[in-house]
Length: 633
Image (cartoon, rainbow, N blue to C red; front, side, top):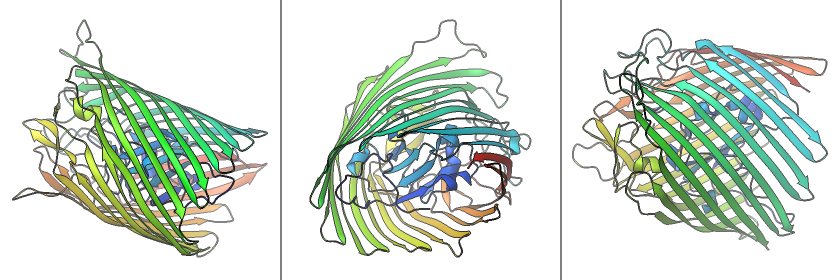
């Protein structure tokens, strides 16, 4: 696992013909194609759980979302080949419905990030499309009625590379651990209402014309699933299903070298998202009481102009995103919709972000950076709600990097970001579960990072201390049986992140990572708790990977989650159990006639530990998978 990778927004900064590319000042971690293949993942949430500092809980809406260093999902930007793929209505994406087949590489970057990352980017996660040298087909079956097949085929003609692929996966449900306590809405060994079906097609075309790089990427996902009800409470649970979900993206990238010291990088994209939520009266899922239909259309663009001036590199950036959200909420009577459906309500926002970053080599060993930016969000249409003022604020980052030797690097940075409220936080009522708060204000975030990295041919290690200080943290409170979003005085996350790996022999890799974080509210008094929901005090992974010359492979890993807290039915934070998932993978590769066949078996959570990311919503218990991958080469 590499510590530094290309820019997590999707390799959008072209290396100039002259001038050494500066080292990044943020902490970065990467999973390459082999790392991802060893996960045997169906969806992206399974991949990201292997990245340092990334926590992926499943919320009460059934969405798997990514936290980075306990920065919550709306503070984390998601990118696919340079395009921002969070759905702007709520600035997040359900990673359990983003097929793993789309990911050839996964990266994470922790705060403080440069202004060029755009609005609401305290942390960033990026996927790049697969770019294999040879095609492959994989088939897999497993616990809970899992069945999955994926295929990727690359072609090359001259300087043009083409990749096309597709995937299909379905399951009957998630298996629950034997010791899980679910007093309500649960019958049988499979978790209630956790069936899922995902299909995808995707492709990429890339070419070069001289020093210029051009590419077009596209995917389409069609999915449906049920979400588990909160089974710790006799009433008030969500009895929801997502009968339809469609997610499409088309993006184009251009990396243009305008001269020996000048580059222009462009990316533009269109994203289409359709989702229907059916709400039922009880856990039999037979009588609907309401339905929410969502239509989201988003266009975005990023422009980076890079200029090398001697030992200084200057990047001027502009990001724009315009998103339309149409929503129709329908109330059913005795399971039937009204004769005349209500009209769609229309919501629209536009994000602008401008930045200027300068990086200079102060000496042969010391690099300095300063960046400033300005973010603004316009709420252009507000449905049937009153108009809302624009959200705006300045951003910035300063930092230093010192490389006293080739193996060592020490860096420090401090930055500022804002995180405006999303349209859903301002205007969404979640099928009459939320009380609106028109006075919701943007979060203001100051972050700092101090890190050191060491690498040799056989080993490497890193450690980074970090602070995130938030004013106006957006959280929730209970108002009767409804929830309402509010601004807290603020919150603070203080933590340490460490990674290490070692190759004791060519066939062996041993490694691990851990993130320790203290997440607290500011300004609490009396008997008020200072805890924050669903933010564990530790996450970690240790692993051993054997890749033998005989074709035999073995991977053993432990994923650990420390103490976290979650709100019960009365809104009181209660402690969740610590947990450890022990996972093992065995494989054998056989080559014949220019083809490689890999037979594999995988067991996750082998000791059937009770893993509870949110109260009443446990993660799967022991899960087994077997499969076969056939590839060229």
